[in-house]
Image (cartoon, rainbow, N blue to C red; front, side, top):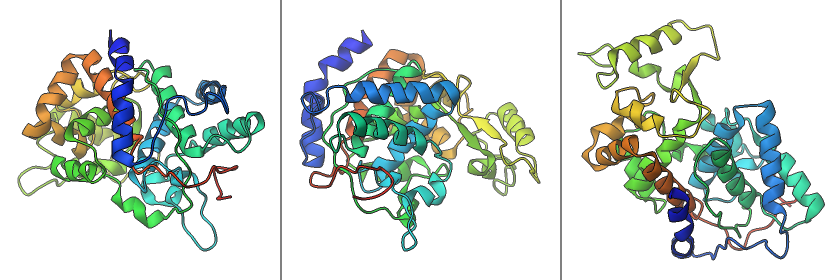
Length: 320
């Protein structure tokens, strides 16, 4: 049923994509020039995930971080140069660590259809594929993005932080043409993934003059996080999975937020704000509803700041 709803929305979503970015994106963009493009990318994702179960969470996060800075233009893939520190070396992106997967897909695309499929489209297709591979919804990816030529590490300060509250998040999403519903649906991407202690430990000790830990945290959960993130902490890999089924794409993330077990301030604040609480509770109750809204919001996210007159990079790490 969820899949029928999603596929019937394709025409509507195409119109959304045109109006949001000014560029015309099309699910059939490569049908004539590189009909095997999606299969090539899917195979690269499957191969990588077999050897590294962290790939799905990292690719999904990479797509989000790409689109939020300069739009979906693959600027996150560019390497730093002696004269420019690129986005991938900005503090929030140091842990992305799955660039090699996109490199592998792009190398195979270049062998099959040289100078045809953009790096920006490759990330967008890969993000859909990791969601499906993890048990989540499927959707038609709109294509036709071009690759940008500018990437600056200092711009990553504009990415939403784990410490952001809902008002800050709504403002950040709104600046990119995305709604509060998109915010709540896309936050569900935290169903995949893991966080190091540094992103949430401010909630655990000396939180305020009246509370040692954040009072919106479930007390038992807070105690568990404290034991995983001791002070001082010598384990650089210490942290917490963002939901209890961290390799499966499902609605467990929302159920945990409802129970006071959101790992980030940005997660838990969605329950405390009247503008978003009802959606968190609805997605916690109904996984099919979440899947439909997530697919819709991913198409909208993929239409942010699309570059029409850029280039198709031959190597995703360097401009042509």
